[in-house]
Amino acid sequence: MKFELIKKNTPKGPRLSRLLLQRGVVNCPVFMPVGTNATVKALSPHELKEIGAEIILSNTYHLYLRPGMDVIEKAGGLHRFMSWDGPLLTDSGGFQVYSLARLREITEDGVWFRSHIDGSLHFLGPQEAMNIQSILGSDIAMVFDECTPYPSTYEYARNSMNLTLKWAKKCRDLKKENQALFGIVQGGIYKDLRIECLERLLEMDFDGYAVGGLSVDEPKEIMYEIIEYLGEAMPEDRPRYLMGVGEIRDVLYAVEKGFDMFDCVMPTRNARNGTLFTSQGRLSIKRAEFKYDNSPLDPECECYTCRNFSRSYLRHLFLTKEILSMRLNTIHNLYFYLDFFRKMRKAIEEGRFGEFKRHWSNVFEADEFTEVTDGAGKGD
Image 1 (cartoon, rainbow, N blue to C red):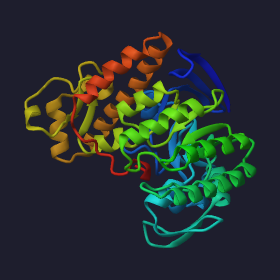
Image 2 (cartoon, rainbow, N blue to C red; image 1 turned 90 degrees about the vertical axis):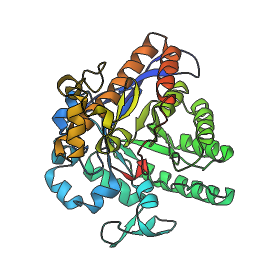
Image 3 (cartoon, rainbow, N blue to C red; image 1 turned 180 degrees about the vertical axis):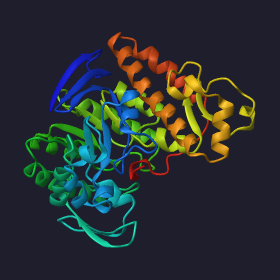
Image 4 (cartoon, one colour; image 1 turned 120 degrees about the vertical axis):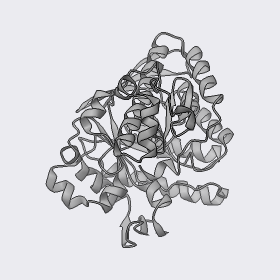
Protein backbone atom coordinates (compact mmCIF):
# COMPACT_ATOMS: atom_id res chain seq x y z
CA MET A 1 0.00 0.00 0.00
CA LYS A 2 1.13 3.51 -0.80
CA PHE A 3 -0.41 6.53 0.92
CA GLU A 4 -0.48 9.92 -0.78
CA LEU A 5 -1.44 13.11 1.01
CA ILE A 6 -2.88 15.38 -1.68
CA LYS A 7 -4.13 18.46 0.15
CA LYS A 8 -4.49 19.92 3.62
CA ASN A 9 -6.35 23.20 4.04
CA THR A 10 -4.93 23.86 7.52
CA PRO A 11 -2.24 22.11 9.58
CA LYS A 12 -4.82 20.30 11.72
CA GLY A 13 -7.82 20.39 9.42
CA PRO A 14 -9.54 18.25 6.78
CA ARG A 15 -7.36 16.64 4.16
CA LEU A 16 -7.51 14.92 0.80
CA SER A 17 -5.51 11.74 0.41
CA ARG A 18 -5.57 8.42 -1.38
CA LEU A 19 -4.55 4.83 -0.85
CA LEU A 20 -2.85 3.13 -3.78
CA LEU A 21 -3.56 -0.58 -3.44
CA GLN A 22 -2.97 -3.56 -5.68
CA ARG A 23 -6.66 -3.77 -6.58
CA GLY A 24 -7.41 -0.08 -6.97
CA VAL A 25 -7.20 3.51 -5.74
CA VAL A 26 -9.17 4.59 -2.68
CA ASN A 27 -9.90 8.32 -2.46
CA CYS A 28 -10.10 9.71 1.08
CA PRO A 29 -12.02 10.73 3.09
CA VAL A 30 -13.76 7.46 2.28
CA PHE A 31 -16.78 5.54 3.51
CA MET A 32 -16.42 1.76 3.47
CA PRO A 33 -19.70 -0.20 3.14
CA VAL A 34 -19.84 -3.08 5.60
CA GLY A 35 -19.95 -6.57 4.11
CA THR A 36 -19.78 -8.61 7.30
CA ASN A 37 -20.61 -12.02 5.85
CA ALA A 38 -18.84 -11.59 2.49
CA THR A 39 -21.71 -9.49 1.18
CA VAL A 40 -23.04 -5.99 1.63
CA LYS A 41 -26.59 -6.96 2.49
CA ALA A 42 -29.10 -6.78 -0.40
CA LEU A 43 -26.56 -5.64 -3.04
CA SER A 44 -24.39 -7.39 -5.61
CA PRO A 45 -20.73 -6.43 -6.17
CA HIS A 46 -21.74 -5.01 -9.56
CA GLU A 47 -24.27 -2.69 -7.89
CA LEU A 48 -21.68 -1.59 -5.35
CA LYS A 49 -19.35 -0.62 -8.18
CA GLU A 50 -22.18 1.24 -9.95
CA ILE A 51 -22.91 3.43 -6.93
CA GLY A 52 -19.23 4.24 -6.45
CA ALA A 53 -17.90 1.96 -3.69
CA GLU A 54 -14.09 1.90 -3.86
CA ILE A 55 -13.40 -0.36 -0.87
CA ILE A 56 -15.56 -2.55 1.35
CA LEU A 57 -15.09 -4.04 4.78
CA SER A 58 -15.55 -7.62 5.91
CA ASN A 59 -14.98 -9.40 9.18
CA THR A 60 -12.63 -12.07 10.50
CA TYR A 61 -14.86 -13.26 13.34
CA HIS A 62 -17.97 -13.83 11.25
CA LEU A 63 -16.22 -15.47 8.29
CA TYR A 64 -14.16 -17.71 10.57
CA LEU A 65 -17.40 -19.04 12.08
CA ARG A 66 -19.32 -19.16 8.78
CA PRO A 67 -18.54 -20.44 6.19
CA GLY A 68 -15.13 -21.27 7.68
CA MET A 69 -11.62 -20.74 6.41
CA ASP A 70 -11.51 -24.07 4.56
CA VAL A 71 -14.35 -22.94 2.30
CA ILE A 72 -12.82 -19.54 1.53
CA GLU A 73 -9.32 -20.96 1.07
CA LYS A 74 -10.63 -23.53 -1.42
CA ALA A 75 -12.36 -20.70 -3.31
CA GLY A 76 -9.05 -18.87 -3.65
CA GLY A 77 -9.59 -16.13 -1.08
CA LEU A 78 -12.34 -13.72 -0.17
CA HIS A 79 -12.19 -11.63 -3.36
CA ARG A 80 -12.91 -14.67 -5.54
CA PHE A 81 -15.39 -16.14 -3.07
CA MET A 82 -17.59 -13.01 -3.15
CA SER A 83 -16.66 -11.89 -6.69
CA TRP A 84 -15.38 -8.48 -5.59
CA ASP A 85 -12.30 -7.29 -7.46
CA GLY A 86 -11.79 -4.03 -5.57
CA PRO A 87 -9.89 -3.37 -2.34
CA LEU A 88 -11.00 -5.12 0.85
CA LEU A 89 -10.33 -4.27 4.48
CA THR A 90 -10.88 -6.94 7.12
CA ASP A 91 -11.51 -6.22 10.77
CA SER A 92 -9.58 -8.60 13.03
CA GLY A 93 -12.57 -9.74 15.09
CA GLY A 94 -11.53 -8.14 18.37
CA PHE A 95 -14.65 -6.00 18.64
CA GLN A 96 -16.97 -8.85 17.68
CA VAL A 97 -15.47 -11.13 20.33
CA TYR A 98 -16.22 -8.32 22.80
CA SER A 99 -19.72 -7.49 21.57
CA LEU A 100 -21.17 -10.79 20.31
CA ALA A 101 -19.39 -13.81 21.75
CA ARG A 102 -20.71 -15.62 24.78
CA LEU A 103 -18.72 -16.37 27.93
CA ARG A 104 -15.45 -14.93 26.67
CA GLU A 105 -12.29 -15.47 28.71
CA ILE A 106 -9.39 -13.13 27.99
CA THR A 107 -5.88 -14.56 28.33
CA GLU A 108 -2.42 -13.20 27.56
CA ASP A 109 -2.45 -15.10 24.25
CA GLY A 110 -5.97 -14.30 23.05
CA VAL A 111 -9.63 -14.90 23.85
CA TRP A 112 -11.59 -18.07 24.44
CA PHE A 113 -15.22 -17.53 23.48
CA ARG A 114 -18.41 -19.34 22.63
CA SER A 115 -19.95 -18.66 19.26
CA HIS A 116 -23.05 -16.48 19.20
CA ILE A 117 -24.38 -18.85 16.53
CA ASP A 118 -24.29 -22.26 18.21
CA GLY A 119 -22.40 -21.89 21.47
CA SER A 120 -19.35 -23.84 20.25
CA LEU A 121 -16.01 -23.03 21.91
CA HIS A 122 -13.31 -21.18 19.95
CA PHE A 123 -10.01 -19.37 20.50
CA LEU A 124 -8.95 -16.22 18.69
CA GLY A 125 -5.70 -14.37 19.27
CA PRO A 126 -3.22 -12.33 17.23
CA GLN A 127 -1.73 -15.36 15.47
CA GLU A 128 -5.15 -16.77 14.58
CA ALA A 129 -6.45 -13.36 13.44
CA MET A 130 -3.45 -12.83 11.16
CA ASN A 131 -3.66 -16.35 9.74
CA ILE A 132 -7.35 -15.90 8.98
CA GLN A 133 -6.80 -12.51 7.34
CA SER A 134 -3.98 -14.00 5.28
CA ILE A 135 -6.34 -16.70 3.98
CA LEU A 136 -9.01 -14.08 3.31
CA GLY A 137 -6.41 -12.15 1.29
CA SER A 138 -7.64 -8.70 2.28
CA ASP A 139 -5.71 -5.69 1.03
CA ILE A 140 -5.73 -4.13 4.51
CA ALA A 141 -5.69 -6.21 7.69
CA MET A 142 -6.22 -4.99 11.25
CA VAL A 143 -4.33 -6.03 14.36
CA PHE A 144 -6.18 -8.10 16.94
CA ASP A 145 -7.15 -5.81 19.81
CA GLU A 146 -9.03 -5.85 23.09
CA CYS A 147 -11.91 -3.41 22.89
CA THR A 148 -12.10 -1.51 26.18
CA PRO A 149 -15.74 -1.35 27.31
CA TYR A 150 -17.42 1.82 28.50
CA PRO A 151 -17.39 2.54 31.37
CA SER A 152 -14.09 1.08 32.57
CA THR A 153 -11.80 1.94 35.44
CA TYR A 154 -8.39 3.42 34.71
CA GLU A 155 -6.73 0.20 35.85
CA TYR A 156 -8.85 -1.93 33.53
CA ALA A 157 -8.24 0.44 30.61
CA ARG A 158 -4.46 0.37 31.18
CA ASN A 159 -4.34 -3.42 31.36
CA SER A 160 -6.52 -3.65 28.27
CA MET A 161 -4.27 -1.20 26.40
CA ASN A 162 -1.14 -3.15 27.33
CA LEU A 163 -2.75 -6.35 26.10
CA THR A 164 -3.70 -4.66 22.82
CA LEU A 165 -0.10 -3.46 22.41
CA LYS A 166 1.29 -6.92 23.11
CA TRP A 167 -1.03 -8.42 20.51
CA ALA A 168 -0.24 -5.60 18.05
CA LYS A 169 3.46 -6.42 18.27
CA LYS A 170 2.76 -10.07 17.56
CA CYS A 171 0.53 -9.15 14.61
CA ARG A 172 3.29 -6.86 13.30
CA ASP A 173 5.78 -9.73 13.47
CA LEU A 174 3.37 -11.93 11.48
CA LYS A 175 2.60 -9.31 8.79
CA LYS A 176 2.49 -10.54 5.19
CA GLU A 177 4.40 -8.64 2.52
CA ASN A 178 1.39 -8.27 0.23
CA GLN A 179 -1.00 -7.06 2.94
CA ALA A 180 -1.10 -3.65 4.64
CA LEU A 181 -1.56 -3.75 8.42
CA PHE A 182 -3.11 -1.07 10.63
CA GLY A 183 -2.51 -0.65 14.36
CA ILE A 184 -5.48 0.18 16.61
CA VAL A 185 -5.34 2.83 19.33
CA GLN A 186 -7.14 1.79 22.52
CA GLY A 187 -7.09 3.19 26.06
CA GLY A 188 -10.73 3.85 26.89
CA ILE A 189 -11.67 7.43 27.72
CA TYR A 190 -8.29 8.25 29.28
CA LYS A 191 -6.20 10.73 27.29
CA ASP A 192 -2.82 9.70 28.67
CA LEU A 193 -3.51 6.04 27.83
CA ARG A 194 -4.70 6.86 24.33
CA ILE A 195 -1.60 8.96 23.63
CA GLU A 196 0.70 6.34 25.14
CA CYS A 197 -0.93 3.63 23.04
CA LEU A 198 -0.48 5.68 19.87
CA GLU A 199 3.17 6.46 20.64
CA ARG A 200 3.98 2.80 21.29
CA LEU A 201 2.18 1.76 18.09
CA LEU A 202 4.19 4.34 16.16
CA GLU A 203 7.38 2.62 17.33
CA MET A 204 6.10 -0.57 15.66
CA ASP A 205 5.69 1.28 12.34
CA PHE A 206 2.29 0.23 10.95
CA ASP A 207 0.99 1.10 7.48
CA GLY A 208 -1.89 3.02 9.01
CA TYR A 209 -3.47 3.78 12.38
CA ALA A 210 -7.04 3.28 13.53
CA VAL A 211 -8.96 4.48 16.56
CA GLY A 212 -11.04 1.75 18.17
CA GLY A 213 -13.22 1.56 21.24
CA LEU A 214 -15.52 4.44 20.29
CA SER A 215 -19.27 4.30 19.63
CA VAL A 216 -19.57 1.93 22.62
CA ASP A 217 -22.17 4.07 24.45
CA GLU A 218 -19.77 6.78 25.62
CA PRO A 219 -21.21 10.35 25.62
CA LYS A 220 -20.70 12.30 22.39
CA GLU A 221 -18.60 14.96 24.09
CA ILE A 222 -16.11 12.31 25.22
CA MET A 223 -15.96 10.77 21.75
CA TYR A 224 -15.36 14.21 20.21
CA GLU A 225 -12.63 14.99 22.72
CA ILE A 226 -10.82 11.75 21.85
CA ILE A 227 -11.20 12.40 18.12
CA GLU A 228 -9.74 15.90 18.54
CA TYR A 229 -6.59 15.10 20.49
CA LEU A 230 -5.82 11.94 18.54
CA GLY A 231 -6.36 13.80 15.28
CA GLU A 232 -3.65 16.22 16.38
CA ALA A 233 -1.28 13.45 17.53
CA MET A 234 -1.57 10.92 14.71
CA PRO A 235 1.15 10.97 12.02
CA GLU A 236 0.44 12.99 8.91
CA ASP A 237 2.00 10.52 6.51
CA ARG A 238 -0.24 7.54 7.33
CA PRO A 239 -3.99 6.94 6.86
CA ARG A 240 -6.21 7.56 9.88
CA TYR A 241 -9.18 5.25 10.33
CA LEU A 242 -12.05 5.96 12.77
CA MET A 243 -13.63 2.56 13.31
CA GLY A 244 -17.40 2.07 13.47
CA VAL A 245 -18.31 5.78 13.38
CA GLY A 246 -20.75 6.77 10.63
CA GLU A 247 -23.34 9.26 11.87
CA ILE A 248 -23.16 12.26 9.52
CA ARG A 249 -22.40 14.89 12.16
CA ASP A 250 -19.74 12.66 13.73
CA VAL A 251 -18.11 12.09 10.34
CA LEU A 252 -18.01 15.82 9.65
CA TYR A 253 -16.35 16.48 13.00
CA ALA A 254 -13.79 13.72 12.49
CA VAL A 255 -12.92 14.81 8.94
CA GLU A 256 -12.41 18.33 10.25
CA LYS A 257 -9.88 16.84 12.68
CA GLY A 258 -8.01 15.03 9.90
CA PHE A 259 -9.48 11.51 9.77
CA ASP A 260 -9.56 9.66 6.44
CA MET A 261 -11.47 6.37 6.68
CA PHE A 262 -14.87 5.43 8.08
CA ASP A 263 -17.18 2.42 8.23
CA CYS A 264 -20.59 1.87 9.77
CA VAL A 265 -23.69 -0.30 9.26
CA MET A 266 -25.91 2.77 9.68
CA PRO A 267 -26.89 3.27 6.00
CA THR A 268 -27.57 -0.41 5.31
CA ARG A 269 -29.25 -1.33 8.58
CA ASN A 270 -31.41 1.79 8.55
CA ALA A 271 -32.39 1.02 4.95
CA ARG A 272 -33.76 -2.37 5.97
CA ASN A 273 -35.71 -0.70 8.77
CA GLY A 274 -37.29 1.88 6.46
CA THR A 275 -35.19 4.89 7.48
CA LEU A 276 -33.65 6.74 4.55
CA PHE A 277 -31.04 9.51 4.38
CA THR A 278 -31.89 12.44 2.11
CA SER A 279 -30.76 15.95 1.30
CA GLN A 280 -33.45 17.13 3.75
CA GLY A 281 -32.46 14.80 6.60
CA ARG A 282 -33.72 11.38 7.63
CA LEU A 283 -37.06 10.12 6.40
CA SER A 284 -39.14 7.20 7.69
CA ILE A 285 -40.74 5.70 4.57
CA LYS A 286 -43.45 3.88 6.54
CA ARG A 287 -45.19 7.11 7.55
CA ALA A 288 -48.81 7.51 6.40
CA GLU A 289 -48.10 10.89 4.79
CA PHE A 290 -46.31 9.10 1.95
CA LYS A 291 -49.26 6.86 0.99
CA TYR A 292 -50.22 9.02 -2.01
CA ASP A 293 -46.88 10.78 -2.50
CA ASN A 294 -45.73 10.10 -6.07
CA SER A 295 -42.66 12.32 -5.86
CA PRO A 296 -39.19 10.78 -5.80
CA LEU A 297 -37.68 9.87 -2.46
CA ASP A 298 -35.09 12.66 -2.80
CA PRO A 299 -35.38 15.01 -5.80
CA GLU A 300 -31.69 15.92 -5.44
CA CYS A 301 -30.50 12.30 -5.59
CA GLU A 302 -29.51 10.53 -8.82
CA CYS A 303 -29.49 6.95 -7.55
CA TYR A 304 -31.46 4.21 -9.33
CA THR A 305 -34.14 4.25 -6.62
CA CYS A 306 -34.79 7.99 -6.80
CA ARG A 307 -34.73 8.05 -10.60
CA ASN A 308 -37.35 5.34 -10.96
CA PHE A 309 -39.62 5.00 -7.92
CA SER A 310 -41.93 7.14 -5.80
CA ARG A 311 -42.24 7.51 -2.06
CA SER A 312 -45.67 5.92 -2.32
CA TYR A 313 -44.25 2.81 -4.00
CA LEU A 314 -41.33 2.54 -1.56
CA ARG A 315 -43.79 2.78 1.35
CA HIS A 316 -45.93 0.05 -0.20
CA LEU A 317 -42.91 -2.26 -0.63
CA PHE A 318 -41.80 -1.71 2.95
CA LEU A 319 -45.23 -2.30 4.49
CA THR A 320 -45.76 -5.47 2.45
CA LYS A 321 -42.26 -6.67 3.41
CA GLU A 322 -41.17 -7.18 -0.18
CA ILE A 323 -37.52 -8.10 -0.73
CA LEU A 324 -37.29 -5.28 -3.27
CA SER A 325 -37.88 -2.81 -0.43
CA MET A 326 -34.57 -3.74 1.21
CA ARG A 327 -32.75 -3.60 -2.11
CA LEU A 328 -34.05 -0.22 -3.26
CA ASN A 329 -33.66 1.34 0.18
CA THR A 330 -30.10 0.03 0.49
CA ILE A 331 -29.16 1.26 -2.97
CA HIS A 332 -30.38 4.71 -2.02
CA ASN A 333 -28.80 4.92 1.44
CA LEU A 334 -25.40 3.69 0.29
CA TYR A 335 -25.51 5.97 -2.75
CA PHE A 336 -26.34 8.87 -0.43
CA TYR A 337 -23.35 8.09 1.81
CA LEU A 338 -20.90 7.55 -1.04
CA ASP A 339 -22.14 10.69 -2.81
CA PHE A 340 -21.91 12.64 0.46
CA PHE A 341 -18.24 11.64 0.71
CA ARG A 342 -17.64 12.56 -2.96
CA LYS A 343 -19.13 15.99 -2.36
CA MET A 344 -17.12 16.36 0.84
CA ARG A 345 -13.86 15.59 -1.00
CA LYS A 346 -14.75 18.21 -3.59
CA ALA A 347 -15.48 20.76 -0.85
CA ILE A 348 -12.05 20.08 0.70
CA GLU A 349 -10.41 20.38 -2.72
CA GLU A 350 -12.09 23.74 -3.31
CA GLY A 351 -11.34 25.08 0.19
CA ARG A 352 -14.98 25.30 1.32
CA PHE A 353 -15.21 22.46 3.84
CA GLY A 354 -16.37 24.85 6.57
CA GLU A 355 -19.42 25.83 4.52
CA PHE A 356 -20.07 22.18 3.65
CA LYS A 357 -19.89 21.15 7.31
CA ARG A 358 -22.25 23.91 8.44
CA HIS A 359 -24.84 23.00 5.81
CA TRP A 360 -24.94 19.26 6.52
CA SER A 361 -24.70 19.69 10.29
CA ASN A 362 -27.80 21.87 10.10
CA VAL A 363 -29.63 19.36 7.89
CA PHE A 364 -29.09 16.50 10.31
CA GLU A 365 -29.24 18.51 13.54
CA ALA A 366 -32.79 19.61 12.71
CA ASP A 367 -33.73 15.97 12.35
CA GLU A 368 -34.45 14.44 15.75
CA PHE A 369 -34.97 10.91 14.46
CA THR A 370 -32.99 8.30 16.40
CA GLU A 371 -30.85 6.20 14.09
CA VAL A 372 -31.13 2.43 14.08
CA THR A 373 -27.59 1.36 14.95
CA ASP A 374 -28.02 -1.56 17.34
CA GLY A 375 -24.30 -1.91 17.95
CA ALA A 376 -22.75 -0.75 14.72
CA GLY A 377 -19.48 -2.58 15.22
CA LYS A 378 -21.07 -6.02 15.62
CA GLY A 379 -21.45 -6.43 11.87
CA ASP A 380 -24.31 -6.15 9.44
